[in-house]
Amino acid sequence: MSGSDWNVDITPTKGTIMSECDSKGVALPIIAPTEIIEVSIEATDSARKAMVSAIGNEHDSKVIIISVDSGGCSGYLYDMKIISDPGDESYQIVRFDNIRVLIHNEHSTMLNGLILDYNDSLMGGGFTMANPNADKTCGCGQSFR
Image (cartoon, rainbow, N blue to C red; front, side, top):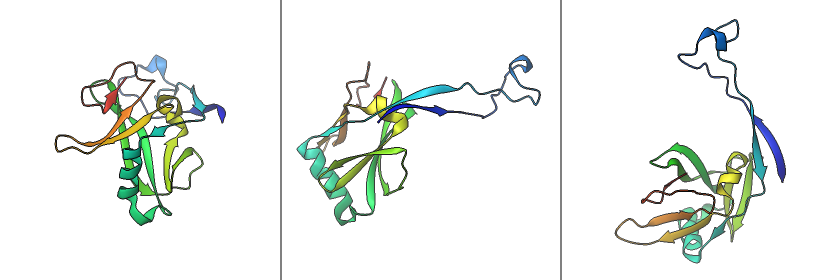
């Protein structure tokens, strides 16, 4: 899968001067293409076991979504959650055994090549992400740029 989709934000911009607005006083959106690539991610054995344990026998109806949000000390934060399968074609599916991991097309370039690991520790255990696309990462491992 490759190509571009267009994302348009039509939210009015606060503090915009009228010369930058249309006749109704709303800032016109800047349209920028989003590159979409076929995403490939890896998961260590410990990450696979943790995903299987987290979803249990709901693997037919539940999926894990890995996404990126703005924030954190480096600019972006990873988000990982279990939800009911959205059945949305704007997600790419990566399978690990019976577990489906979904990556939104919008995040494909930022998450391609991601290596998912799981560390079981009393001192801050959990999932960690090694991202070859990150220029900088935070000490916590959850934020990147």
